[in-house]
Length: 137
Image 1 (cartoon, rainbow, N blue to C red):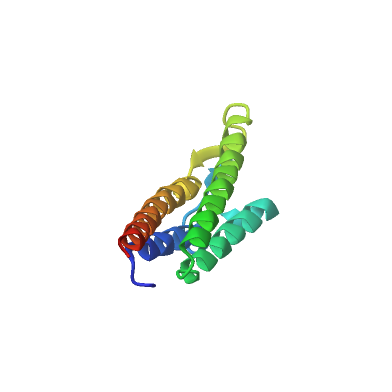
Image 2: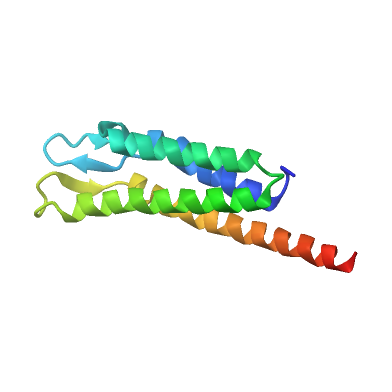
C-alpha cells in the first residue's frame, strides 16, 4: 500500500535527488563566485535523473515488495557512484584552483542513501511479517 512508512522514505529520497539539486549548488568557483549546479555536467544530470526515476518506479511498485527492495538497492548503488564522482572532483583538484566552497548539493546523494536504507529496512520488516503470517495458515 502506498501509505506505508517506506513510501515516505522513498518520497524524501526522490525529492532529494529530483528537486533539491535545482535549489542547492554543488560548489562555487573561485574567480566568479557564482554557484555551480548539477546541470554543468551531463553525467551529473543523467545520474540524478536516473536515480530519481528508479526511486519513483520503486514507490509505485508497492505490491511487489521484493522488486521494491531490489530497485532501492540499485538506487543506492547509483547514489554511491554519484557520490564517488563528487569526491573525485573535490580531491583531484590541486589546492583551491577551481572549487573554493563546497555546497550542500554534494551531500544530497548521502541523504538519499540514508532514506533508501531506512526504506529497505521497513520493506524487510513488512516481508518478514507477511512470511510469519503465512506460516500460521
